[in-house]
Image 1 (tube, rainbow, N blue to C red):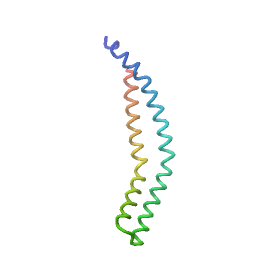
Image 2 (image 1 turned 90 degrees about the vertical axis):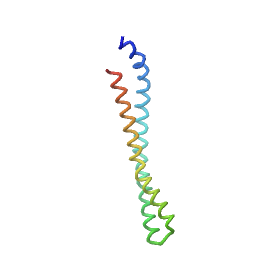
Image 3 (image 1 turned 180 degrees about the vertical axis):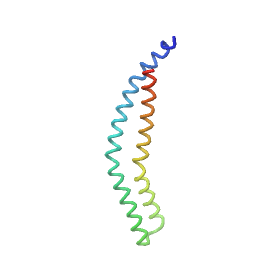
Image 4 (image 1 turned 180 degrees about the horizontal axis):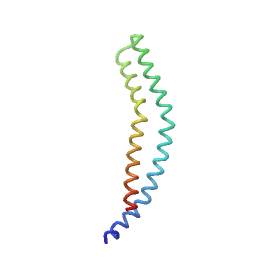
Length: 99
């Protein structure tokens, strides 16, 4: 009886697993390729903030460039963390499907 109740849920998880795997593949490729650009942007903004500090630029401008540099430095890591959570969800669904 227990397996009969799980059968519709298992059938419903099949397309969800396929969608999650395709999403994970596409997202991993996008994060991998854009991390190069975001790391370059982080470097430019952080070096720009150092140059602004040396040139006695307004403090608000320096803090904005530091904030943008930190954001671009951590953006790929945050996206990777979110992709790990999608992977965890996919593993849980696969475990449910195979159990």
